[in-house]
Length: 279
Image (cartoon, rainbow, N blue to C red; front, side, top):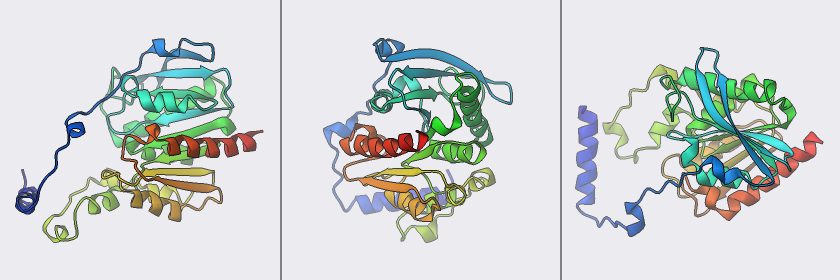
């Protein structure tokens, strides 16, 4: 453990020794509901387990879920730790919309081969898009890219490389430098220095969002202490698109937005605008 981190921990312990730390019953559980292919056995949905290649010769696994009422297709890029079988809420929420859905695990996640890396995940994102385009014959103007947290970097990257009907950024990160600054209170900042890998610094949503003119939806939780809503607001203000909307959900955190009614309402409004443009 390096010296700066030790100092930070000691300072936190010192401060907390003068306060009361409240531990509630719900804080003791990190619930992750699982979902299986059997969930999709109904008249409107049809799930296909798919495998598609990356440009560096890996085979990634995913689910392509066809909706008989689909007016578009969402390509979903999960956050750090996302695996589709443990993503009940996001999958079921998105499928309440009239969309097809492609969800997949990144390299090194779930049962997929490979080791995660920034460049590798970018290749994964392109491979997923190209699968929709070439194998499922989905037109670019009906593909909506959706990135959550870490996945926001993949979504914006794919949006700079491929055509899409719209882009949804949920609890996004501005860039690595900005994010690490917000991890610490101002009085700790002189004591801690972050050594950030250059490959992380090179990937900036702030820079990419200034090149994207497609319709944008920004979603954030007011109580998100992992990627604060202020970063979402900064991205919204920086975006050059003339078709952008933002929603900061009052009681939302980092991983629970799909369970909020306001999330579904905002999604519906945005997608209806997209569908109108497609037609």
